Length: 412
Image 1 (cartoon, rainbow, N blue to C red):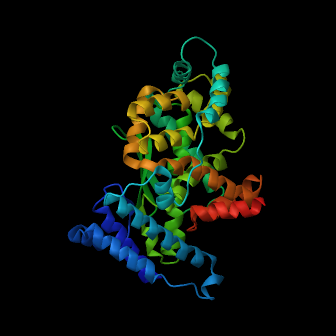
Image 2 (cartoon, one colour):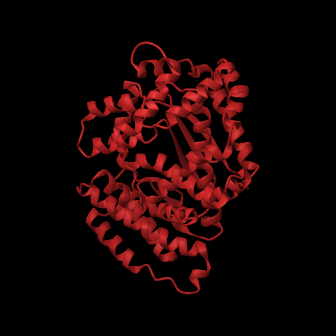
Image 3 (tube, one colour):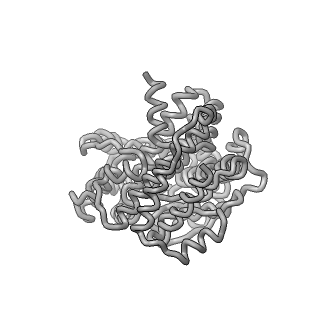
């Protein structure tokens, strides 16, 4: 399998020469990247090489089945290669529906919801924010009273990161030299990004184009850092690359099933790190004062935020309709404004995300739900056991379809 893995890595790097967003991280042999840049293999040759590599993956021997991670490795490489093949077809001009694309790339299809699915939550938010004028304007005005001032942003994020790290280290053994740096950037289609650089190091960038609300401190600190992307990548490097010599994990193709696991664990990790009312308590007692906000309003903000969280799948519906050609950009912005409670500016930025990352949006909400179901089906309601199962998932090559299958079996 090591030879299969090496060929896989080189094919991912080859695709990256045609798709600037495809290789999210690589910390394998530098000469492999140089070779890919020099050769610039044509897409048709990449496709043929991927087909040959898929055919060369050996069947599992009886001895292999005794190593669970070894079994998962084989399934992972096969499905990652199938996603690579699908991405090449897209680069060659093939068009798929939103759901066909997400299945091909991310090994999952998000549920479809009609407008009526979101209407009840919209009514609940309306009741929580009484007043005159359109609800989206009242919601936006309410949230704007919880913006972190720019001159306090760094200290608020630093404190949220420190808390996320402390809570993670209480349950996770991380490499002693792991660390990351934070940069504040503009003109990006995303709100935050983790660029993993190998050797247990990350660069985390925070986009300040749009206002940053107080709840984004814990969201970004956990999602991008502890126990999210930074921890996920560091554990893969430690347990699979260094301990087992599995070179395939030195490369991360963004448009692949790995992304659903990465985004899903990063979002669910927020709940793992701050279970129950612990998030509200920390925000009220620590982050609100640091941001110069009134702690007495923290509970009200948390209640409204919890309602808005029920609209998570609205972004999927807008993306599905927009990318399937059922609505244009203006209609997508209007739909997001109505059903996702986004300001027109934020909704416009979100459609630019759709343009670049397409069906990737399912990885955040469906990914979180699949990870949550998988972990809690094995760990129950005990916070410590959830940490244990969460960490096992972070350090393993599981696929989205395997998460769903495991959770479904345990639910029967």
